[in-house]
Image (tube, rainbow, N blue to C red; front, side):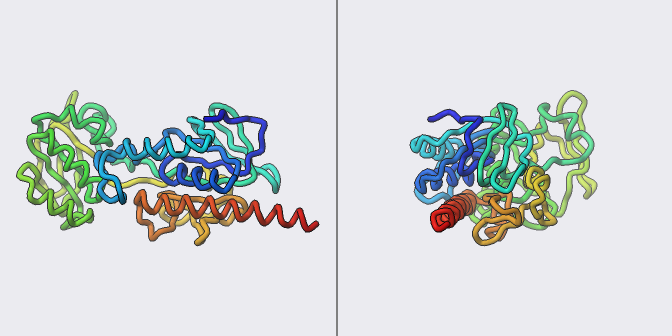
Length: 314
């Protein structure tokens, strides 16, 4: 792996090292686009998936799949900087500057692939008891729930996966969801419904997490109070689009970056890919992130080729 060079003007900087960002880097390398990847954590939130069952040719932990993504990117000698991006500016028409906690880097094009962060549950007790029974990561904390009673808040695939994982450790898993059925993959829901350890509280919202030093019970808006030892929150993600907004990029009402079929934003030279965009019918999957990452890399390559052709003609 080559080291990033602060004074160099890269063809492209990819902000984000999840499935979309790493795929963009692989395609960029194949197109001989000189790129730099900057990400807080290689693999991103995909690392937290305890079992991936819908990636063709692979079944297993997300961490294992993302390790393969990273190794693939590094095999092309793509520089990967683990850092926090603090801002992006567009000082002139020919370049962008990406400011990080490890220095400032320059590029002619940008691919934004920051993904999402976990949506927080804003109710009494959620913040105070974080790390004391309240968790946003079943993969990280499932071991602490052996033979205990836990609740999972949410109805998505992430919530279903969390419940399946926790069922392997906990004595009982209670899924709390605001609608009358889960919106996860039907196969996962069917498996949960057959699991004797799992029960459902549909048409209910958790309104308070109660406990002095640790989680003791939860209060629901249907009047019930349930004694639990843990609360695992899986209520979706919030697009990390602040950097894009600061650049003047158009943002949809749900916080996602607006992109065209070529993954281009309204700002010339800036593209976006993955869960952060409003593309792919907002279907937050590794497969769609990979597709968008590949398209974004192609678009950067085409833009660079067009500019070179124009210079050659002149």
